[in-house]
Image (cartoon, rainbow, N blue to C red; front, side):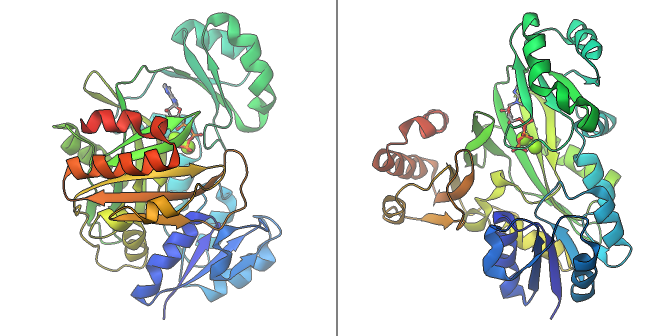
Length: 379
Ligand code: ATP
Ligand code: MG
Ligand code: MG
């Protein structure tokens, strides 16, 4: 029985383990956090990501290593890759860990991005603002997630406040200033590439964020027209360029019918959770298949799906469980403000029925605000 090692023990590891089990694949998770929610699947505790004594044991017990957590230090990933097969390649991880390298690569692959400038010093910030103008967003190049490590610059006079918020991180992680894009909508493309080069994407997903955190997703995104083949082409170019193996997500802005690349996640992604119930093969199943060298599953959808993210704490499950074709996912995490603690997916054959089911759940949970933009799209 093959053993898949997973670096990081969050909900992504848990859902990967759940998808691996019926394939006859065992999973071994490592994490340094005492409250890793994949605890149900026998985690190995690391003191930290440079705990090579524990990592040595881990490497000896697994056949393939993959990631739940994209900020595993590149040196740790490289060290493991010298001992055991690691997918995706640590090279892809390194690019995705650095917003500057990532956006540079996007452009090289033909994917436009918001205007951006590297910022390492206070003087760089002024110079970058002079080029990009306001509004803009100052972000840490590394380690940001869920909108953390970002400062929105509404006008040029916010520069001091932005530097006060993030300047201390400039020397360790570097910063990047990006033009603020008044996008028409946000989409993501979930893609998978196998060890033999087979490449597939799921239909585009439309996403809504609140305070920089994903709040709601709808799939397939409606009225995408030529954006679907364009996204597929760009994702394929990127995957081939990186020799990528496994699932990845590209977060995209749509502005005036054009795709702009925001960032890439070198792993399964929150905006693809709907694929568990809404697609023939889920992102988790296909990631396991890809990294183990198995044939990929079908990425076709079964109908329409929507996902509610539960941030901070879980609402009452009963109204979701009472709704037809709705599915509850409790990550088993301690509630904490801003923390992703679970999600719910609701599916339907017809878009009209999906809208009714979304509305039913939202009313019962008093979440009308969370779903309003999606219901508008669904008509
Ligand atoms: P994630 O949890 O997706 O990794 P993150 O912390 O890496 O999030 P981003 O994806 O960079 O953050 O930004 C979070 C959200 O903020 C985006 O999905 C988008 O809604 C908004 N945002 C980020 N950059 C821009 C931009 N340049 N213009 C407009 N909106 C932006
Ligand atoms: Mg990110
Ligand atoms: Mg993002």
